[in-house]
Length: 262
Length: 324
Image (cartoon, rainbow over all chains, first blue to last red; front, top):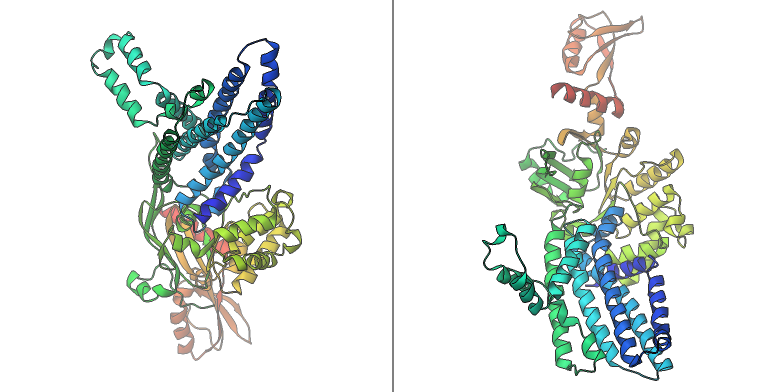
């Protein structure tokens, strides 16, 4: 595991150098001024609107970071050939993959914590509101990003970065669709005649969804914005669910990556 | 120069007796590439190699011969389609095998935003150098490649020659028993080439087994003990340098006394009162000497005309091309 942390450190430094944190700081400024903008429009329930908009921005930004860095980090190192001196060291490829994932997650955590802090400070200064539950939403987003980046990283061990990104988007969308939506869509959709031989299309879709990570479990924003109760056991169980998926995906990635010629 | 090194061409049974001293051993290694929609490419056709510990092994061949494929298999970057490869008795690619080797890739890129010292320390940690010895290991690697004064420079600030020297330093930092250098002087100017060559010669003196692949044949000739020529994935020749350069050479016999009958292929190159000289193929030497003795002459000198590695390489490749 020590080797994984060495690779993680290297990855984190490398990722920081991409200057994506400039975008993080730009979003932090936007979140900082968000209460002012909302007030200027004379909208009521400002704190709820601010939390809703800011957490939505943070959520999508986290997903974008996870998709991008998850898909690109390993192939970029292979492309640049900086991987060669590293991987010929006595470290298992498993440790390398874990290191890359930890490095990416370190960067995403850094970015998301800055945005979370910006939201808290902004609400505290302009509205004199401090809602610690915002951090629960952030934890949910981080778990979601951790699973999504593991999905993309696993895909990137056997396909190109764009394809890994597309597969990541597919898994994210499919895994995030509520069951009711799938049932409604497949129950009411008009299917082409050549697909009528599939009488169980609903079951196929549900089975496909069942095999993918359920990203809707990590979405705690609505409960936080509307003040619904969130139980610690729920947060812990979703985190455990996320960890289980991450371990599974990393094992899958190890299998494909260990067979890959570099 | 030791001529009794195990080398390819020995029977496998005989190699078994020397296995404990083998740094590298490959047995019937094949590598196939299967590009989509195109016929498969056989990069290596059952390669058998045996490199003794302490040898400086020159691995040469034309472009596309399979050198880099073989090196990648040995360093664990690629796996063979069939056959086996071991490094100091450990399966190539295993952690134990990688712990024994230092590798300088053909196209070496590093995390160039880091300083020389910082990246070397990272490599020392990955090479499992004990914490207390890491700085010392870096210092010694930097001294070996004469980069101590640039330890604080970022990699990107180094010239290409210096980056190549850094590459050798990172390969050395774990104190490996085997150093695999894939075209270490490629793309360097003559001065940088000489610097790298001097470093390799100095390492040779330290008893490290060096697996050296290069297209610069004079360099290989100067540095290596054992030469292996690969052509289209097949081993064309693998023998000690001296033997390789003598193999297709011509022999000069200087003698005194009456002129003997010349055997087939022999020519009288010079004749004087002090002695005469016959030039002939090495296969006819014994017969010609018998002829000289038969007429009462005495042999003063038998000298083998040595080829240069470049010429030997060219001859072998041309012959192989004709055969195929």
